[in-house]
Image: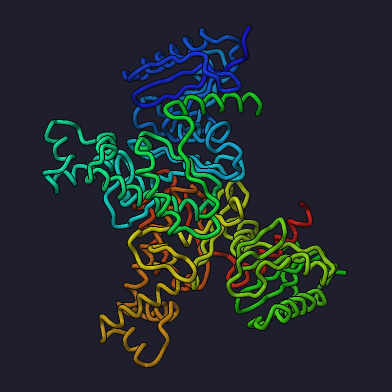
Length: 319
Length: 319
């Protein structure tokens, strides 16, 4: 009989990952499902199926299941209040899963559980005050103050991607009614938009050539060309990095954290993004906060949601 | 013998107020001192003298003394780390005062203690998540998350006045190296600057006339003319109110508070400032946070620092 485990589930809009995880965060099995589409019943069946695969692969007893969901979560009732990408809004998700799986179930926001993973065992371990920004298509974020996640009155706090840094700036994405949000200036979506602008303005540059060859203009493409030394792509990353630095300065002045952890797909740009960001943050933030903060890449990449959901499940067993 | 009391001291850069306060925050005596100037020894003597006056006027036993100081505070050691206006930086202030007064002494940042007063007995009472902005010459702020003050790694957190909302905006004031901070757009100082601009641009308007008659262009003057219906002054307040609304949207998205309390001298503008601020906040912030937050004036005006220092002293007695 192996070590006791929990199942950590990252329930994204386009993919699902259920991991069989022990207390040291060793992952014994990964159950992947792509595109959990279909109606509500089909989605729930898919989730149960993946979790049961992960349970069957466990080396020891499975004690609980944790879910990270990209939604505002009502933790009292275990309900995903506002899921844009999954047809489970306002469903008693936790209770349905506990019934069908026969195990204790706990549910939280995906960015919060990713912060938990980085805080307990990742790039923010040991910190009393830490911030996570996950910069992908959009920006997810979690904040730990005095060792505890900041949740706010109804669990909707720490939407740091929707912090305005340029009040007359570009419109934000999706359901956000705002403009000049950090997400509107720094996400993968924003990088792709910047790449398109440069391709238009400089028809002889690398971005225009890539666009002309039929490639989709994404943050990943801009990053790839920047790593190849294309001046237009490098300028896009530097502009985004400076805007990120303004956001970091705000985070430093607001939370005075020991560490800011940066994750998500955009981090593939590495120091091409982080160097101008750190530079701008130190030029703008207040002393002594700016002098003590570390800005570091995340330890856990694509698996931070799954691992954080497992951490959450272990915490629930001891609460 | 009357009720037991503490002494709450608001130790500002230009004035000192020591109050004799009982557990229900009744104030039995107020010892005022203006301009605690002079060298370090003179300032300390002035403080001791005011506190002793307050002690002598107490109806019952005096149990502790609390200080609110406009400075970064090292609470472990009771030291004001960075006081711009008072010559007490890096002095073991708490221990010196405890020795000279013969009472337990506790020291904290003035905005934090003002937040304590509003949270325990003022406009934020009953809230688990609350934010205070004190908008005067500059902006002071305090934040309560889950019933506790947010302090950060070295006590420098919640500098909400130095949150950038306009990254290419005007230079900020004093020692802040930033630009486009909330304080650079919304403080009394910023209102005075806006009044000067309008006076230049519209030589026939009320602000130009007031300036011509030799009056200093302050936030108070702009507010006075706005209450009289002057269009230029009204426009200054509306512009500042809209910028305040952007800051409030950030605060709502970051902290998801039940209540945001607005205090300080600029609040004399009342709804001329707060109406556009609320309107802009609701147009920009995310649902459901924007729908549940209340934006209300502070209960305690000029005495919030003194009363909060008293609350702090009572808390210290029970810690």
